[in-house]
Amino acid sequence: MSPNDVKEFDFDVRKINWNKFIEEQHLGARKYLWGSKSTDFAAGRRKIARLRIANYLLIGSTVGSSLFLSYKGFNLLTHKEPKIETKLD
Image (cartoon, rainbow, N blue to C red; front, side, top):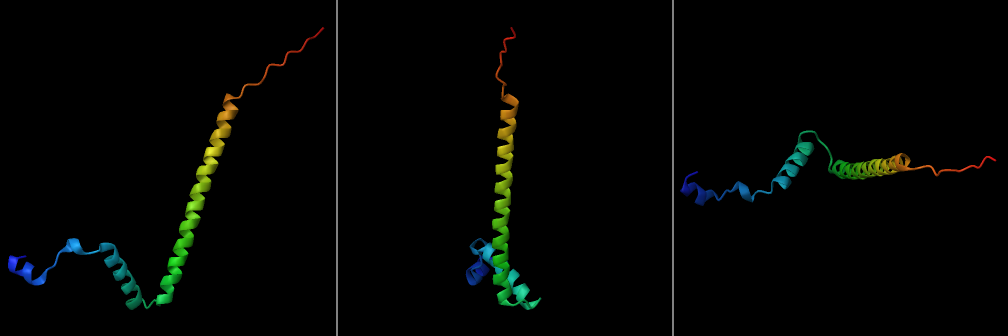
């Protein structure tokens, strides 16, 4: 752009909040191209929040189970049986 255009239009892509821009474009496309209602957006966000919580619970239980099984396996491998002495007279 020429310096004259820069003064006249004052456009800088570094000033754009790209996350908000993409979100607004997506919501606009859903509303005007596919005819979704705004109540569908709230329900979708709630569903995503529930799925995110379920995902964290699944990951947490998987990690917890793995740690527990590793601990039990390590103890099983390193456990030494006590010697029992029997006197046969």
